[in-house]
Length: 544
Image 1 (cartoon, rainbow, N blue to C red):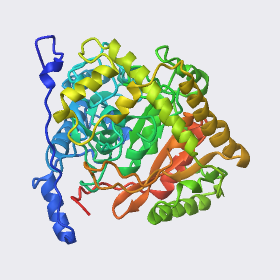
Image 2 (image 1 turned 90 degrees about the vertical axis):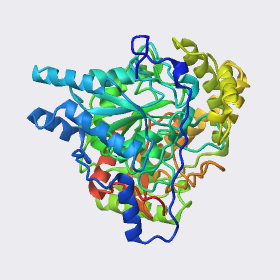
Image 3 (image 1 turned 180 degrees about the horizontal axis):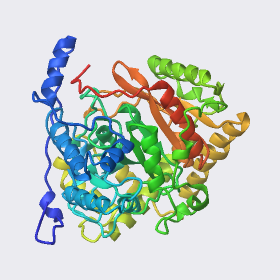
């Protein structure tokens, strides 16, 4: 990626789109036929990829011993992205790779040779969701052609902290365009810039969203760790659907500065990894107070820079975990997995309180929708106005751009949410204030806090979501059920861990609780993960 302006890419050079045709095989294929078709997707030649399921600790140890360098690790991942994301099964989880990744890795290798090691991520590749600003040769677009070529003046605080900890920013991950805040009929994982991201377990199934590419890339071993963002479900749903771990932190633990916004009261960034340990390592790096985001003030006293001390294999012993039965019942096989998880936790010493009185109300959901509409307009207008080079300076400009480029931007679904948000006023309106108060009260004092106080709970358990549905560009997503909303609206933490499979499709179990309870949730999630060992590699099956 280059140009005549010092390597920065001009926006007008990128107004293009590539169509994606999702292949499918006939129903009723035999196992041998499926195996043959899967083999053809990943290529006949054997791969020399050596980092399958590699953890942060594995990579660090191999660099410390001299068996690998940061540059060789980056090369391995870039080769795997080319093999699986651009070719073969064509996962389309990575919108762009960082043209400076190898150079950065070489510099980090030189630092290591000079005994100047940055802890704890020195030389570890990480993908960022394409709504997280980087002031480098990569663009930040939220998946939209409207911001193609846009390069912010500064790194997002999350990106800066990762760089300072020694991470190699490997590239930008695909996402549901505008973090899935565009249409009521959207397809998770689709963006005009990246096309349709595909679930690596069964390729015609949804990766869920909006952090689709982050989840898929981690699951398919295209990176060690990725960063996603969530407003409501956008970390935990793709983590669940792609068989990995996702941590949605307390709002205020991780800075949102430099992240394309939806809701100032619900937005947060968080790690997505193949293990609770790796997610905990990265959470400690990106957590902390930031003057650019006043809501992080609480992180100074309530957050931690290292969450690994809470990784306790015996962490279920004595834990009081409440079961949110109101989130069950949408799929019998998902319920069966949850019952198995509950049984295992009892065996490992947890006290299970089943059921607890907790159910998101219709009033809370309506209030959440209203709050998002107001906050999206205010936040996006501020974000766009601050960009150094873009023709789109407001939500109204974005709506007009999409209309002018409807063939590329709206081939499958429209922009009803954008239009509805543009009709809202500012955050001083009583309609917004009342919705905001209702959302917080119903999710916090009359929701999670009340349930946990009533039964002296350490955490609440619920199914994260159902098995991934078939991608449908005609009707949009087919969510069957889930449990993200209460923690999302409250701004409270939520961790999802693989709970098993339904017909080859991953399903996760969520643990959520009070604000700033990450240490407790990590302890419980890690102990369950170690006891259950449900993580399995994807097989890139074309269809079920």
